[in-house]
Image 1 (cartoon, rainbow over the protein chains, first blue to last red):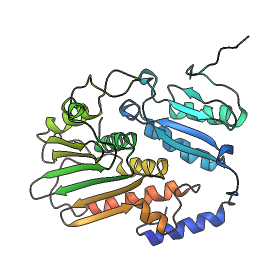
Image 2 (cartoon, each protein chain N blue to C red):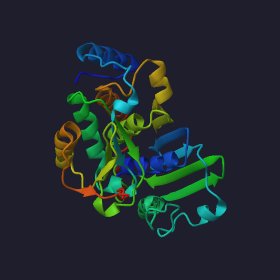
Image 3 (cartoon, each protein chain N blue to C red):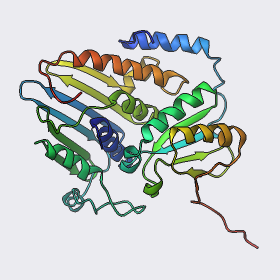
Image 4 (cartoon, chains in turn purple, orange):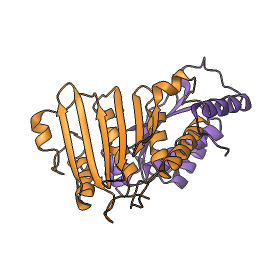
Length: 131
Length: 187
């Protein structure tokens, strides 16, 4: 990548990028976004959550999937870090554990794109069927 | 924690969890005295004296999801193993200041690590928190303020911009590192 030294350079690069990427309409409501929350507490950081988060940011951009990637605190599954909580539009959040970069690829490919569940789900929230 | 950047993310995450709206992260390297001062200042909800007094106890945490809290104890450990020190000041309702001192001439001093990467993630993940970052070596300084970025019309959440910001930070930091007048253990 060419040099980006000043804010002006940064701005210029951004403009270039904007013209290259077909700008997706911002009129969509955030509800239609995929939400990805990466656990970034001490346990997550120590297990490499940053690499996973960078991968999600880059990869979702590359694949033009409208998503919001954020960080969250420890969810209490330190043994299964890095953990990622994914909320598909209109669905309940699902927490995945042991998310390496490779696993993150699987999650994007199968869960985010196709809606198929993949290995490593931590059963965090489930509803009992009321009769 | 194997590098400074991880501590930066960890301590900043504490601030975010403490509902901070402004976070100021700063690094200051003084080549004459071989000291690196790393500090995170926030305006979050702060801590009571009781919590503050138990802060370096690894088996103390305010969380309910787990029984240990290792962030601050680990930071204290990495400072002290290299002859540095840690100080935390906090006032309930006003915010917290965490100041870690490292001796850069000590072989046990932590390496800096991927500051650009962690900082970018911090900015991208928390667009509603004002994050100011500064890295100073002697009298040379690099500053980044996400309020200034958005004033300039740089949208962090636009696809692809995260990569640009990372490059921007990285190139500036690398230039800054060349101003070091002594060889130290940071890189």
